[in-house]
Length: 130
Image (cartoon, rainbow, N blue to C red; front, top):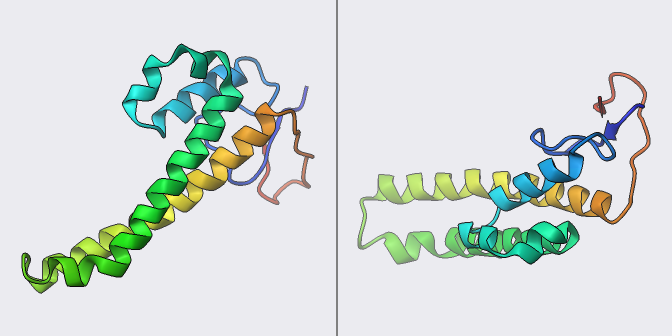
């Protein structure tokens, strides 16, 4: 069987319908969340719930990064040298880009857990097959 994962699918998660794909999805989703989520059996038992909570968590992190970018110079200028403030802003920009990728990947995993399947693309167009 040809299992297809779309562009943006997390590398750590097997493609939908591949053997053990949901197990790898749960592991990856838990890795994106606070460690306390691992203690909630319901989230392992119902991966769609975990995927939705993961999306909300990442969206909250994105909001925090946006706020940090908006306020860092003002909030830190009296406490840090300017090069440290600029380095903090650079770190937030890097984190913002990472979070955008995680949010997209979490959305794809959630869609697959809800039953969506992704069509194969022509070779060389960025699809991942297994």
